[in-house]
Length: 99
Image 1 (cartoon, helix red, strand yellow):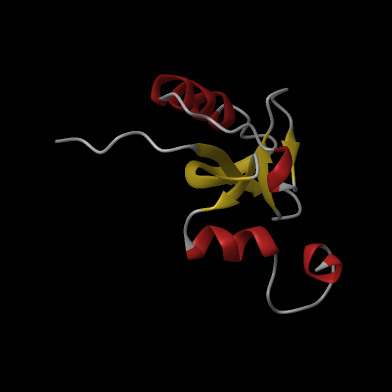
Image 2 (tube, helix red, strand yellow):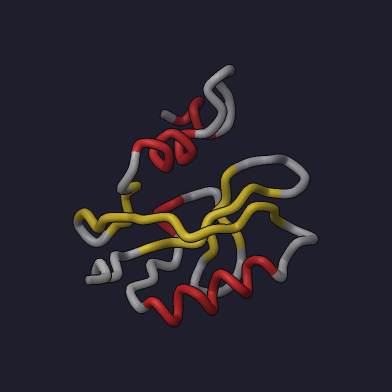
């Protein structure tokens, strides 16, 4: 029996800077997970992923990442995504500086 579809976001890496980015509802890329478009329909998620993959001039490695909703905000569902959302771990600037 197939597993029920869980909420997801489209994520990738910025082609120039390498930062983790998320696709918004306006089809632009953001570094802030809270601005990501949370997808709850499997067919819609696959279409959004295709849109992201077509933006190879901006991003690389687009895929669907599981999220949970906490007070209406997306949160990473897995350790890997939580780690990616925090940014590079070898220096304190960018996202980690804010944390």
